[in-house]
Length: 197
Image (cartoon, rainbow, N blue to C red):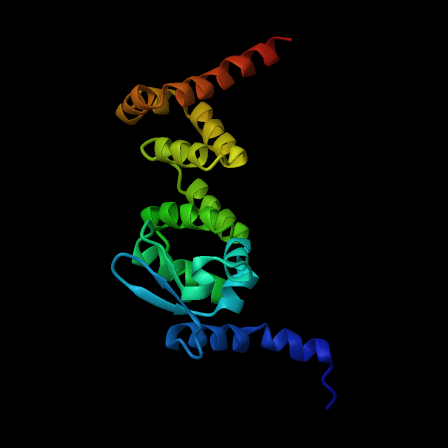
């Protein structure tokens, strides 16, 4: 029986490769760099990190401390966030993602310019938006200068304005983030002006 190349490729779907890379990561086989958080050290591979992140590529290509010492200190990230980030970089897997981990992973993805991971995290957060967590997303999007992410959150605020703007979370948010709250409210005003034309 003849089996075409496309049939073989379709059956495989990269599962073997994904499993092999997950083993490579999990067992630290031939690792040549470490990522060190405040509580844990992770073995990794410069070529994988460089292929997935332009920030890591720059670190390992230039005469930076990380290239010479073969260690990247990441004291600003929690061990769980680094573990999730590395697993994604090796396998594209996001396992057991929840609100808090998605927020932290989004920030890590932005720091290391892992665009696909950042997009997946923002999509997860958008899908799980509610009036009680909206303000967290507005702050996160604004802090990372992610205008598209912020606009989606602002659109959500305007769509559910009665529930959002009357909440305790919004009142606290407006006290601490006046300009961002004003910007969101101004979008409502500008929308009404546009409708009146």
